[in-house]
Length: 595
Image (cartoon, rainbow, N blue to C red; front, top):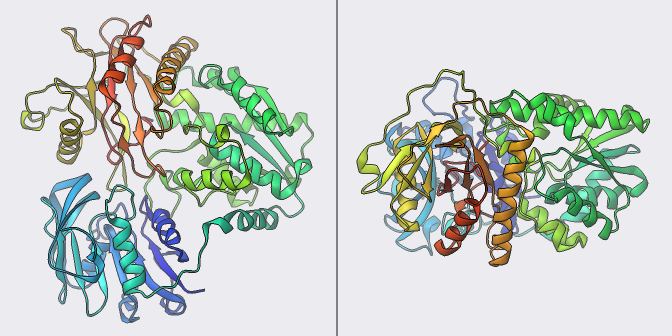
């Protein structure tokens, strides 16, 4: 079937490009960068070169067969693909003096088929450090931003185009129009894809993959595992699917009981419950580093699963391990050839990867995004409370509780140029969090500011700081400033029952206000994070509400300040909380979760 071919250079957004093309009703297929040219010659409407974390001028950076440019097939390069096209066709790529992460304003230059029907200025989403400094022969500039003179380029005779920005993300205001222009006006593709056919396709794939084996699925109660469990049960029948809900002790307040009741109400009687909180907490007693926490949690899930399997006399060779893995889990764990590891998801640890390589894992949703998963759940007839829940990570509150080792050497905190935080008080915080910039993982400090209640101004400050400093990947608003310093806990803080209970209480207060004020459906996800900093108790809360569609990009949610104040006041009634912060970082440069 004719399709758009996407060459994967390791971008966090490669599958998102395919997803957007499918939304246009056109089949899209992803290929490795070393795909033979002859494989692209037939049945290909056009070629898209994805972004990626490398620099095109480095020796080990991925490339492609230059013969692709002799196929007389339209080519669109995005981010790294844009730079690679310029580099291979005689242009020049350099490290940018200003790096761009997040929102930028694109100004059109001239008129071209690929930028037809978009206004002269529009918002686009950037994530790059390098930039095209000189055009290849035959190309012209089609658009620029304040910090990127060649943000869009094209050779209309050859039908080759390049964008430094990411049109595939929702936060590129007219990105879908540009992709539509490429797919239909330039590539002349025909519509041949229907998302509502997904369920039958997935069920067929499950039956082919499972053969005559049974499936043992770890069910978390989250949207992904709920839908995966329903799909597996629909495809194989209740007798061949064993669902195990493991209570890790890291769930939100009363959540385990709510999840068990939801499954019962939905008619699933092949779900079994195991309380394993001691199994998870004990190996994490002295762990501080976030990647190590994630790996231990992933291994513990497998150990508990194996113990349950042994008690049930489940023979490994006759069973497959089912998981509700979705695509962002895969790509953020460096799951494609050229992708960087942003954070290791508990369902992508080495032991799981080994099982995958042995063909012992089945993941019916691994190529899909959260909103697609919700759509599948709707097609399956699942109740709203099972498919419209806010996303909640498999490791639960364990990765929303930051830890600190008081004996570890402390590096000097970075400084911030005053011009970046005009007229605002500020402080670099003595903790770090995970971020994603230019398709690479960062682990850097957040900056707290106070003195402004203007969301637009705070948004711009956050973008300016993360674009200018490699040592800052988040900006927070301090909601209760005072004269006391913001210090790291003088005592080692790890995962303990007391800290878990403290965060459960804080999270429950926040979630109650969100629901009571009618904001639950407006906010896509609302992590509440506990950090070991403050002035007396050295425990503080970070509010991290975000708006997104598929989790690959996100805006911080602009909750009305009177409701933010209500949350702050409620949280400060909890004994042991010093400060309350509000995260105003978009993704990129910050990930949605802090660890």
